[in-house]
Length: 205
Image 1 (cartoon, rainbow, N blue to C red):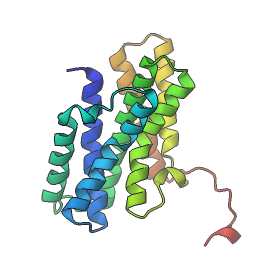
Image 2: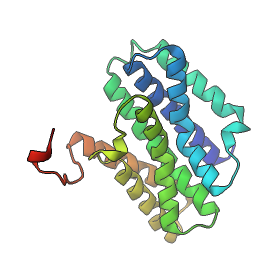
Image 3: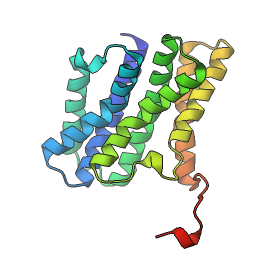
């Protein structure tokens, strides 16, 4: 099996659970939870593939659909064991953006795009599914708040190209880039690091 396909499926697993948890947190019915899991999993990748004018892979490879359904149902079935929805949602979302950043950069690189555009594609692949999820759940998307989210994906993309320039093996590039995204996101949340606030206290609601 192609290594990028493996990363893509792992990203789908992480985002399907993330989406299912978000749906359950909003107390949606099972159908609503499946829809949220689905758009979270394939939203960013679909936009990426459409812009790259390549095949939208989940339309022809049912492995993606089966994976989403299976892990969304698993999340619903074992919801009582996932006691801390907030922590669980954060964990799977973080793993998802790390995996999808690598996949997005790699696919854009395969299309011979400029490195900056490749990083943008990686960030978009990682974040857009979450944007759709949050909008459907009636929340301001994380990417539009002060949280370190898209910035972590951008840094992962930057490390991807730094290692690529030094001819590092693909496996090393993928693992390090993924790890950079996850570590930056984790550190930002643990130490409450956020982007600068351009509004003073008088403007806060």
